[in-house]
Image (cartoon, rainbow, N blue to C red; front, top):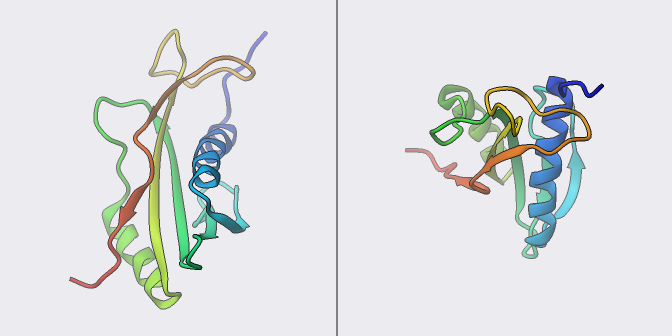
Length: 125
């Protein structure tokens, strides 16, 4: 019998989706952190050697875009500024094809809500 994916497995699936997009865009990975609630998930550079911190948030599928915690993100942006890095955010909604409000099952199809990488301004206001 199939089982629902755990929160860590959902996070890993979301990271795989985002990682494939980063590869297609030509990013080179410097570090990958798949541990749940540890940020950033990816540290990578583009072809111009600009460093990026990539935050991946796995979530339930919603009718609205998947958002990040604005207050927490301001703290993280400050860290990125100090590291001369840019910040990308990827909200990934995952759901069960039979009930989008339930998590997908292991080794089964899933619904995906993903609008791509979002470049977050890190400059001070």
